Amino acid sequence: MTMRLLEGKTAIITGASRGIGKAIAIKFAEEGCNIAFTDLFYDDIAKATEAELLAMGVKAKAYSSDASKFEETQVIVNQITADFGSVDILINNAGITKDTLLMRMTEEQWDAVITVNLKSVFNFTKAVQAGMLKQRSGSIVNMSSVVGVSGNGGQSNYSASKAGIIGFTKSIAKELGSRGIRSNAIAPGFIITEMTAKIPEEARKQWEANIPMKRGGLPEEVAKVALFLASDLASYVSGQVINVCGAMNT
Ligand code: NAP
Image (tube, rainbow, N blue to C red; front, side, top):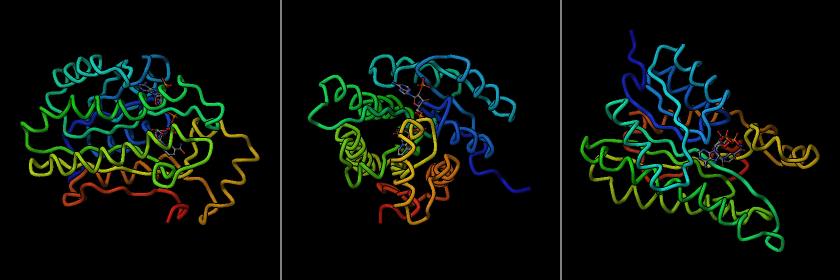
């Protein structure tokens, strides 16, 4: 019998009741990983995802948490550590968009996107750090975006948050590398989820036409890369950004 890639490990995945985060949770559970996931509210969607994971035979629990809140994150991570024993993998996935041209962008739209997308990565990484240092191992995967690599008109707040994630990812890789902790980022292109469903049909078609592979990506296709980075398959990969974008950003 072959050993599954994440057998007996525990992962925290933020914002995982739907979209890319959920696909990562399912993929990891298939590989024997116990899943602690967060979402803003423990609603019917979170409950359904939790039930789906439990049916896969792993330990799984949903936690209601606003990832942008520093103290709340400490409490949640302490709770998860008590419930699961240890944390081996952290996937910082929670994210929002509030797209508009700079001319129309309000301070609230800027602050909301920076705190939910970027500060959340600081909050969770800081909260898991002590445990990972003690066990001298850990893999952190942060969800950036191709627009964090190359910028995008109408998304200056979102692009800045996603570029910030890349700087943070690389710094943590350097800071914690000697302790066996790896830190990498994924930069998805156009992935078909509720986030991109908000884009008007015409604009979506135009996006797809500009992708060399001529289609949007599936959440599962991002999840496969997260699995690679989280597992020992990537044991010497740290401080990197992997684009998952159908050759859109080369
Ligand atoms: P999504 O379908 O909108 O899901 C986002 C998830 O994050 C939801 O579960 C949401 O919870 C949660 N969330 C939002 N604010 C939160 C907060 N303050 N605290 C905790 N959880 C929160 O988005 P997605 O497309 O799966 O995107 C996942 C990640 O990939 C994001 O970081 C996004 O920026 C990034 N990304 C996506 C694409 C794409 O094309 N889809 C491309 C590049 C990067 P609720 O259900 O409670 O709202």
